[in-house]
Image 1 (tube, rainbow, N blue to C red):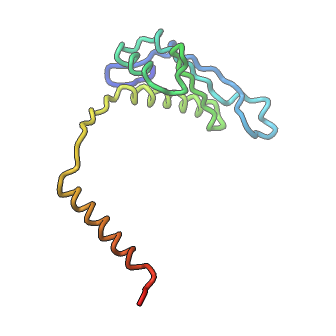
Image 2 (cartoon, helix red, strand yellow):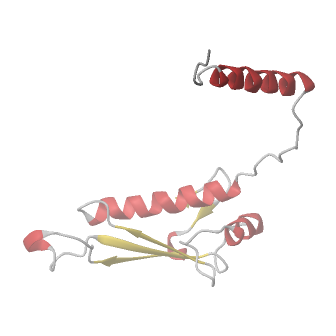
Image 3 (cartoon, helix red, strand yellow):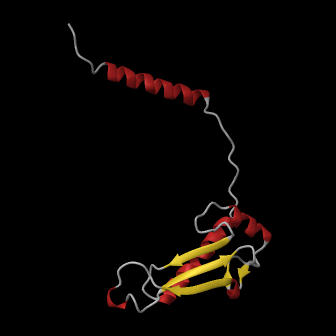
Length: 137
């Protein structure tokens, strides 16, 4: 059971975990041990509330396929258990991040005073640079 919030959780049977071989150097053990974890989670077939499903499917994330399947590959650690925990944690963070509703931005204009201060600063800087020129008699 993966707990997302107080009233939202995902049963273990909805998350498909499979062990695969990790990429990269590994020495003598590389061809014998499958320590990386491949996590697959189908958003549409899950028991998540509709709000979470819509938010997840609306994300522009390369880990979410066109079919609505989240694919996470965890291979940071040398043990399968740590990689499994890492993959589940990353799924949890992704779902929690999708649930956060950003505050709507309101367009604002700079004040007259701030415009005047900016232009005065630019004029002062221009005078300073003009004084750096060649001195003529």
